[in-house]
Length: 141
Image (cartoon, rainbow, N blue to C red; front, top):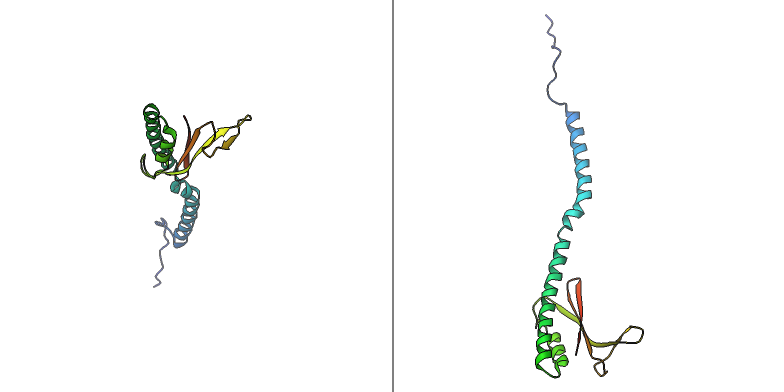
């Protein structure tokens, strides 16, 4: 007697080829998705960090302005003392640097000229920085 293998009328499951093709397509789509969204996820906190840096700089500048007003009301030669305080590291807070604290004046064409402190027009230009953010203010006598 011959034994025959019955033919499957209802195929259930997937063939090995179908599984392999599905895995390849899914991995290609995953790689595309990582390339497309990877940079966005890695850099998504940058605006928050920049905003925090600017907020901290504004806090330091508020402290400087408050001290400037106090010195202007109580001392006759306050601008040089204020400049010394500004140049003292972390006098008004922490986590900032002072790249510039110099006397300037503006010529007839409104161009800024470094004064060196000996000129008649005493304007102190103060720039503070934190990471890649800077804040600049002018203080006069």
